[in-house]
Image (cartoon, rainbow, N blue to C red; front, side, top):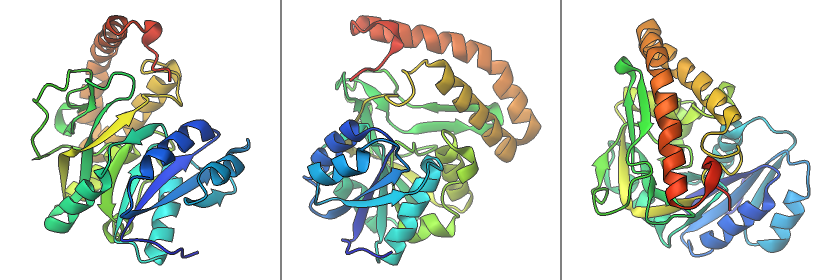
Length: 288
């Protein structure tokens, strides 16, 4: 059903987490050039009422069931298209944003016809001097997909507007028409992997991905999945990455990914533990 929208729509997916969503929405009140849409993914708690009460200015699309992050984003994109929206920003609900972030992202899409996706600089919410995402590295032939700059101090090395390998589903901006023409997110991924898959499809259509450091987002990392090294998260993420490797690189990429996996897993656990111990937060969790 169409709604009255501005040129840009920011879509925030909620599932049984009104507190984080409301905090995100309150940071979005400083985005007057964008319409904000909450897509409630079949929450079984009192989320919809809480969100509507706390942020009556935000639009709410209440879905009857939880069909995953990708499906919720696709529903938002269809509503945006029906409402005449040009640019859509997908934003995790466990984030807060810097003022004007959506203007920076949409501005890049307006000024560059060959850019298909614009992505922000994403820092840790709890440790705002540290990078969580400053673009992505996607070398499918070598079985590598990873964030650039993760857990590194934001000391000026990540200040350059530049092409990047893939967009993270935590926050990305895309032309609404491009998103739907490319088929949107593959809903079969459920959680994790749909962002890399979509990025690679866009790149195959010669649509670039641009990292826009002027747009800054702060992420409460893995608030919905038990920390950066939560077992459930790691299992889901690696299962999805194996699908991506098979789809875009074939058996050789899957083999290389599997061969690298033990080293990546162990070294990643060590890096996460060291990072959080240095921040005086035990257990590799990102609480807050």
